[in-house]
Amino acid sequence: MDTHVLVVGAGPTGLMLANQLGRRGVRAMIIDRHAGPSLQTRAIGVQARTMEIYSKLGLVDRALELGKDGSGANLWAEGRWMARVLLGEAGRDLTPFPFVLILGQDDNERIMGDKLRDWGLSVQWNTELVALDQQPGHVTATLEQPDGTTRKITAAWVAGCDGARSAVRDLTGIMFPGAPYEHVFFVADTVVTGKMVPDQINIYLWRNGFHLFFPFRGEDHWRIVGILPPALRDRKDVTFEDVIPSVRREAGELNFTACSWFSTYRIHHRSASRFRDRRCFLLGDAAHIHSPVGAQGMNTGLQDAYNLAWKLALVTEGRADAALLDSYEEERMPVARRLLNTTDRVFRLLVSHNPLAGMLRTKILARIAEFALRRAAIQRAAFRVVSQTGIRYRESPLSKTLEGFPGGAPRAGDRFPWLRLKLQTNGPVEDLYQKLDDKRFNLVVVGQPSPSGDALDLDDLLDIHVIPADPANQAELARARIPQPSFYLVRPDGHVGLCGVRLDAGAVARYVSESLRLEPRSAPRSPNRERAPVMAS
Ligand SMILES: Cc1cc2nc3c(=O)[nH]c(=O)nc-3n(C[C@H](O)[C@H](O)[C@H](O)COP(=O)(O)OP(=O)(O)OC[C@H]3O[C@@H](n4cnc5c(N)ncnc54)[C@H](O)[C@@H]3O)c2cc1C
Image 1 (cartoon, helix red, strand yellow):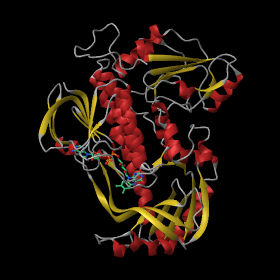
Image 2: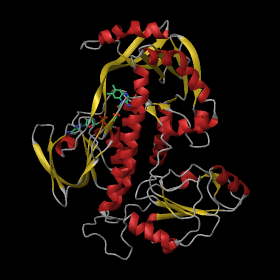
Image 3: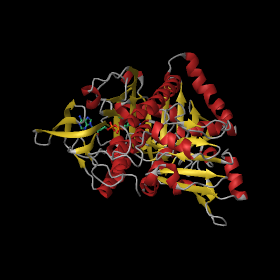
Image 4: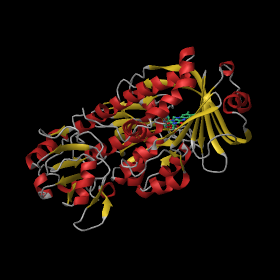
């Protein structure tokens, strides 16, 4: 076997997957048909959940240094400032990163691409997947190389991170139903002065559409996104100068001094009919595409990769049955479908030609948004959705909440909440999230003694965190609605796998063998096992 996992595509999704596999010791190969990294900013919103994942990967400081906090959003209607929406406050207790980071996709790709070196990996550019042949134990992939010749390689698994026109999707015959929107978008990276509220997102709503201004790092540097005026829609040679009059009409006096990138693009809303065909997976834009409303696209692909990586690591290591991989589609497809529906509804409202929708957009929407988002509960709910910290897999076969667990508490499938606790009696308050090793399972034990790791059948894959009894801890646990006593078995990707009131070694053992499909410690390892345990730190 040439490699355990062939990652096709070195966009954000493929780079995240290759990093996650590399740091878990999986032999991975990453290829891209382009000659080198993309220089286009494209996606620019990095959500809290992505920053959490970046922090585990050792990238968050670099991302924060390069990006800009863009949490505040100002709504303008027909040239008048209407309202300001501040979502960051609502996320203060939910994540260490309660804001949207404005950081171009090119920078995201660069920092993830640089990180590959830590695991001895690098992208093989100018290398295109052109054919796939799936066998029971491996896949043969045909790659076209820079000199135009082809070569065949074998891989145990193939990850199609190859974007909206995915070759992996086409070669596996997976359908991609959906449709294009009639509107054409434009995007421009500009240097401009005007009435925009500095350092915050400015949303200009008008009768036939919208313009978004995102603050970039650097003086007067703004990314503008909007829909092309209908008169320009069918022209192939539209330039930024052509759209300036319509931007000025809505956003008022603007003084442009530079435009470093301008592009137009048509958006589709589509979701693959399956995210897996035998040994091939689809992730990111290869699996789902939707309108850029809410800056979710790139972030969703990164989370697809985080979901699949730990499962692939356990399976390639021979620690888990390949059936564990079924949960990738079971968990990520509903997330993609929900996202598609939500972004579709919001997008249609934002661009509808219906006069009523136009009036709603310019006269009512901003007021409703401001009024609703002054309410703490609505703010928190909105923050959870936009930041992707609210994504959960409660219906997954990997999620087991034991009987008698109180309603209202975080439960199996949820992202384990962010907690600051005293982890040593009389010690300082620490960030528990930073202590959870995302290359292992983590057992968080509250209000009861812990059995030894030996009794739990997870071998070297488990870290145990017993939370000491302490008034400060009790207050923090109550805030997060964590029952006392309780226990949470947290998966490597930070979602709760199993939870219950009293820690029951038998229930943990059953969960490990029946849900996670991990091989018992005593069983012989897979014969093609080639390296040290992947999850060991
Ligand atoms: C103009 C524009 C603006 C956007 N703005 C936003 C935004 O504001 N917010 C947002 O969330 N999203 C935005 N998006 C969407 C965002 O860019 C995508 O969601 C994101 O790029 C998806 O990442 P990916 O890695 O899944 O796919 P891609 O970034 O498309 O990467 C796929 C990679 O696969 C490679 N590849 C393809 N076929 C093969 C093959 N056969 N062999 C080898 N390599 C192959 C390609 O060369 C490419 O590098 C925008 C997109 C565009 C085009």
